[in-house]
Length: 254
Image 1 (cartoon, rainbow, N blue to C red):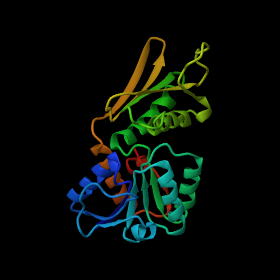
Image 2: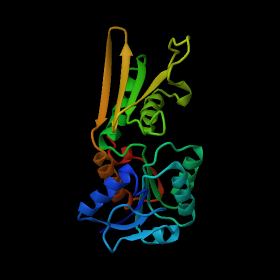
Image 3: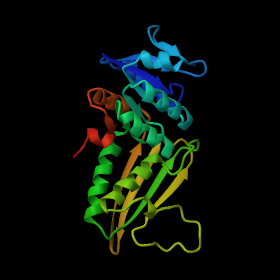
Image 4: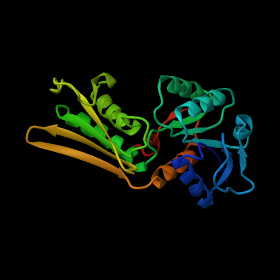
């Protein structure tokens, strides 16, 4: 039985994740970390706490869908008290990734801006096509609900990184939005556009454009359940791994 702790259990994905765990016969909701009162019921045997030590000690693996500030506190604690971590919080910065690398020397850590299995495969496809169609222009458009706090989405940035890396490039070629008069494309530029509105769970389109033809790939998330199921699969996979930093593509490597 996989003993899972949920960090960020009051968030949109966190709530869905809790329900998925309660329906999974191979997993148990061991602990839930909350800063305020939990607004739904969990089994009586689940540890509900605001004490980080108690939370970590009650779990065998932790899944995080919180905020960037909370994720940093979790990583700082884990660096001193190792435990397998699945990090799904977005909007992270250099400090977070440095902490992940520090933690990964002591425990297995899996980070993904998008826990969808489809997106994991899409990143593999994007890298392959980007390398094969070396001279094609690349543009990425991402759409999310009106309440999303970060832009571009972590998924869009990861897609851009996959495309750039396949061409031997880095993030310096990213063009995030276009709002000036001089918008003519530069060589190797990868454009990223963000749209926000309604209750869109997530839609990402990456296109490869040439004179006379273009090729587009679109992934659409219609429910947050896909992120919860992906995170559960990641936890089940990660618990068996050695220390190191992993991503969803490692699970579905083509």
